[in-house]
Figure 1 (cartoon, one colour):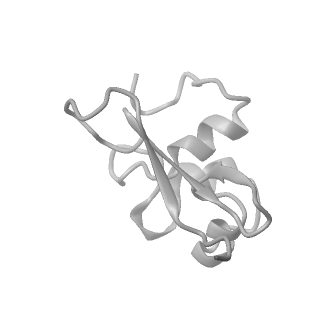
Figure 2: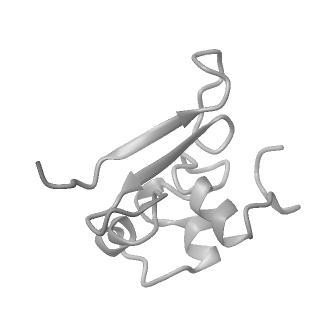
Length: 94
């Protein structure tokens, strides 16, 4: 079976509430090149409109997936990755 671009969720606190992207749920994808990367990076970014690792795009991203409180936070794992796997001061949830 070929590798498909299907999101995989990581729940930090199991099924306890809040279960919200960017707070305790982070989404990763398995890319066709057999890479495991945050959603919004690579193939996912190509189909969603990003041209690369642009921090502003991950924060304000397309399709209401940006890492901010007015969008759903789907790209927050990608933001943490490009920030060197650290949560910066402007991260929307702490």
